[in-house]
Length: 434
Image 1: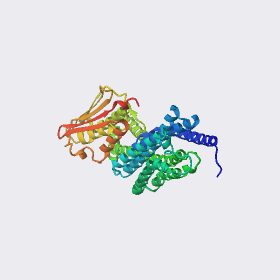
Image 2: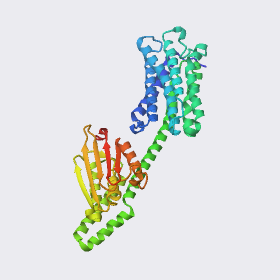
Image 3: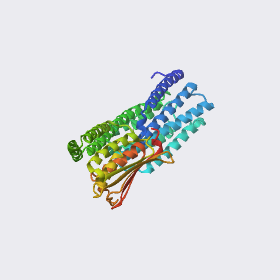
Image 4: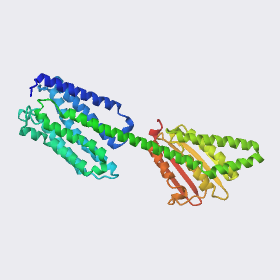
């Protein structure tokens, strides 16, 4: 094998490490922020960040001069050594998080992470000590060939590779075939680099291997997140369709049209007005299906008013409505208040012989949040039996989920037989500026 000169080796390392740094920095800057919402994505992003700084530090060391022992070189090498062990540990943490997420419960014991961190700390310290001791200088990488010091220096990395292999083989069914094969790239490539580096004449192999592994896992991770994001969007659309379908139940449309039919014979002007309200209501209902963003409460309030005007035509003096709206310039998920009003009409006032009153209020809270209250003096129900308010089972649960996911909001319901029902939506301050 032809011997490479130190200058050639240095030039190759600088070129390879600079290229690897550029790849990581470009991907870091373009990484979609919506993918950082879950813990696994956050760990993966941290692994990318550490990989980038680790390679940049090592690259600076080579540019400055690998043979130098001044403060800059010691600091850069130390950061790089800590970084490569940090990447190992973050990789194991990422595997654990993926296993726990796919398994729907925590199955990887915390002791695995504790052992990994301990091994990483000891290994990094040994490599850093090798910068100050000529006797330990071959712990991190030998000058040529294999020797006992090199094997001692690689022991920490070998243990972490074994731990990661154990996790991947132990939980391969939980992770799935594609995820397991992608994650195997880390221990396989790093193992190959560790074996080949003593005969590579000083050319760094571990850092490029880490980048290749990262690209493989990133591709799999990216595809997984895209699929999950599309699934969440489809589920969100289905929820909106379910809500809209609930609002367009045949009996409601039939009752409204029947009322308008009889109004045409007795009061044509009121019938014309009812048709206009019904048209606006149906139009906004269909628009709500397409809305994927938050809406102003003022928009939702118009929906509520149109709905109650139609119900007022049917129930007449049996249904009284009071509005006490002081604050409406805030955001909520579309069609979150209207279902509560509908429940108040149908299951509260409509079931009461003498009828009753629905009162809708909104206030700005002292912490800059907002609160919406829908109160009726209808028949009420035992709060332990929420199905009395949610006969379709799941609507209230879906409503709570939408509020929590979209604006960090909460829904509380209080009720008692013959005393009416009060539903309160509280919107958190951090949602007000979206």
